[in-house]
Image (cartoon, rainbow, N blue to C red):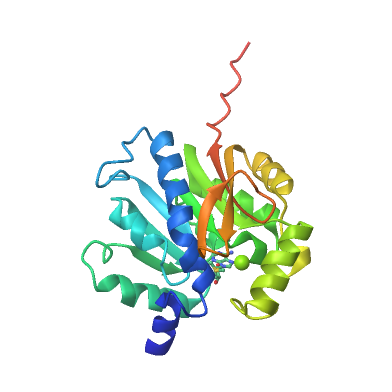
Length: 242
Ligand SMILES: C[S@@+](CC[C@H](N)C(=O)[O-])C[C@H]1O[C@@H](n2cnc3c(N)ncnc32)[C@H](O)[C@@H]1O
Ligand SMILES: [Mg+2]
């Protein structure tokens, strides 16, 4: 367990790409959520009082900074070992010890009628069996007028070259076979799937990797890695009787 904990949290280890991307995706999340909930992004705890769920939280590398921003965080993952690792790591700091970790899937949590002000799911949709159903579940977990944030990899030739050939076969950042080409989701498909789930996408951004500085930055180029922020529509007003 401790070797696995170290691996998940080692910025140079098998989860290096997620660690490298983390500050960049956090800056997108911080700015969109602060705008959505009319919070001051420069305050110490801009997400104070908001219920946020990290769907597919892995070892908790997103859940922890969200808790530090003041959010009341729930982290869920389909794999029990990930939840155990996330729990042990978060327990060492009083701010993150309050994160509620649970081994379940988005689909199963919907059955418990749980809802959150913001639902965040990073790098998960390209691994699920049914992306449409997954979007429906994320929507069901979001309160009306709440925010949903999803990041994933585009199904483009550039993404094939960079995220599969580059990251898996050349750089060996990820084990070969981590990403299946046919399961990748294009931005158009994601917007449509979310629309069908009553979420309107308000903003999208790409993540650009500079191999010289070895840093990621937010960019307009959504041809490889991208992130989308949407708003769950408020319930349709009931028809007034004639
Ligand atoms: C590539 S990891 C991403 C981890 C984390 N979100 C991040 O970006 O750092 C994908 C995670 O999603 C989890 N997962 C896959 N399908 C899920 C589902 N339907 N509900 C909850 N978790 C799921 C997997 O167990 C895995 O830990
Ligand atoms: Mg992935």
